[in-house]
Length: 436
Ligand SMILES: NC(=O)C1=CN([C@@H]2O[C@H](COP(=O)(O)OP(=O)(O)OC[C@H]3O[C@@H](n4cnc5c(N)ncnc54)[C@H](O)[C@@H]3O)[C@@H](O)[C@H]2O)C=CC1
Ligand SMILES: N[C@@H](CC=O)C(=O)O
Ligand code: NA
Image 1 (cartoon, helix red, strand yellow):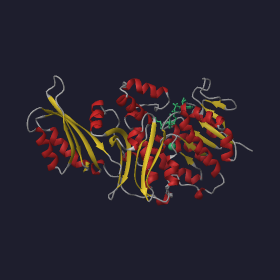
Image 2 (cartoon, rainbow, N blue to C red):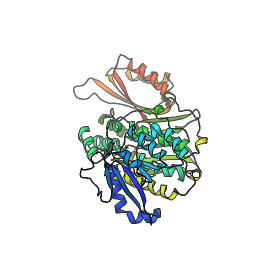
Image 3 (tube, helix red, strand yellow):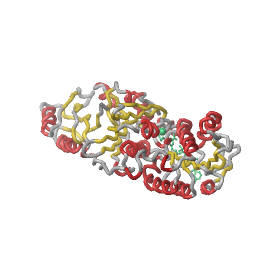
Image 4 (tube, rainbow, N blue to C red):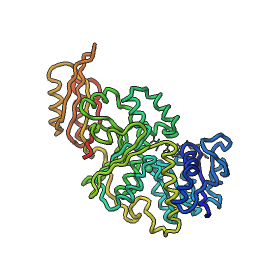
């Protein structure tokens, strides 16, 4: 049986994991693909360095263009990351009529519209299962498994590093720097870990998920994005008292006026399955009609879980070699001429419930003033806790849970509360979702 010849760009965490997986499960993969899948040529920045995988039988080069231009390579697997060189190499591979598999969410979220258009012209496939939620086959599930459904919303823990840091820091009491260093050592973090911590990586993934869920073009610039930087142990404790856990979520929801796309720390009822997804694990919940809610759970980062998704795409490409391009699964789930122009809502138009925490002077009437402002702004209160001042402190923490309200109304109410003489500094605010 003639092997399928693969060119690999990048022999780091995921590249090494992919070579290892193709070797370890080679027999099963061949039986599924119908032909052996072999990496024949690979680019590494330092080819001479020791690797986590065996490079026997693989020609190594420091020039990734050599791999793309090699007439022997039929599929190019892009695992160098970033969006400059990765885009150039991807477009070049497409122009050479080669199929491309990538784990690069930044590349797809920012340049996917252009890449897919070029790939369509050349009749080649672009696989990007590894780009969202690592080893969870979420692209496949939404794009194919839910093809008969109308998706209402989708919410997920889609960055393994951020979930690992939140879990270890807030629930196991470890320090941020130490936990981040461990995530980097384990191969979970992006080359620039601020992408994980600031929510940028999750926003890349949400961009992709929203497009395949709703059939809209990729629109990264419209995603509202907050990272995990301002989540404190204090908030974790208050959330726990109220029956919630704090998770970093990507959420896209279709409303009458348009689609909300947002990434931010979120309070979830502790009984929710998503609230209990810890460490590097990811989970995505999809609410669709008629299937109802479905939930997908698994490792969101790491060498071999991610390689699992890369290999799945490789096998799909091999199985589709002989299919006419118009019969293949469309890149963004919907046929390219049927993408919708449903607007993405500005964050001010999005509705959520809220958790508010403020420090107030310990004097009569403050709570009444705060609740009056909320009432005047049309915001109903679900729960209030007023704490005793801490030892030696004069100010009292007040914690409020609200019902759902438009972001713009909440912005105005917060400004008015912060302007009260009895309120110290800025309010801490986090969104609350029940995912019903
Ligand atoms: N690490 C993970 O758990 C996951 C990573 N990803 C994505 O997979 C891609 C790769 O990530 P990792 O393997 O973690 O990164 P990595 O940094 O471990 O590996 C990238 C490799 O590419 C090499 N490289 C960079 N420029 C090169 C060049 N010009 N020529 C040859 N080699 C070059 C680097 O030397 C490095 O070894 C990224 O797009 C990342 O976002 C996606 C899902 C999970
Ligand atoms: N850095 C990313 C890797 C997978 O996409 C993460 O931590 O989720
Ligand atoms: Na995936």
